Amino acid sequence: MASPDEQMATMMKNLEAKTGKSLAQWIAIARGCGKEKHGEIVNYLKSEHGIGHGYANAIVHGMKGHPSMASATGKPAPAAKRVSAAGGGSAVDGLFAGKKADLRPIYDKLMKAINGFGKDVELAPKQAYVSLRRSKQFACLHPSTATRFDIGIQLKGVEPSGRLEKAGSWNAMVSHRVRLETVDEVDAELIGWLREAYDKA
Image (cartoon, rainbow, N blue to C red):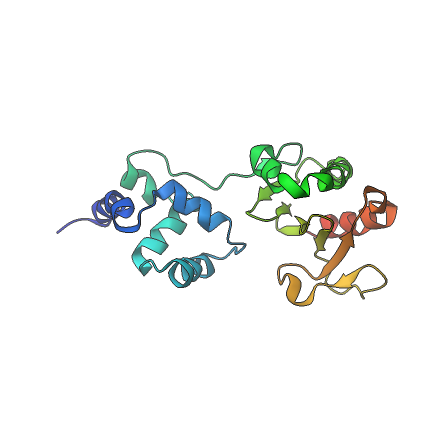
């Protein structure tokens, strides 16, 4: 009878043939789903992409760098990658391609200020936005349309006021939302909210 490691190795060999995507491609999809917990990502892969529980579970193990994946693939497990707040690279560049290019100065000004919070800020670029993390997510930067840049901020317990709106159904991962249209709106008030969220994360 095959050992669990041997079964996992067989599953990984069959993954691309069965699903049409490699483990690396599935990990990229899993990272971009906006969910954090193991079970939530497994359910997302099953419900949104129609793959079986075993494959979905293995993909999440691979994304999180589980030791069993090293023996299954014959190489170190691909741990979830994040980049420092100073970086972002092509994943971030892609968010500002085409019609959203005019929003890039807003992002750059925000990151210049956020970089000053501390060296432990991490970026986790998703398909449509950039998650800002410390020990947990404290904000997300979202170029939503060609003319609007949304910022999600985790400030539980803070009453919405003025442009600091309740996030509501816009994004359940944060408590508040601020909508921007110009780089001048990246001001001391906004940076103060982001700094408070960072301090609490």
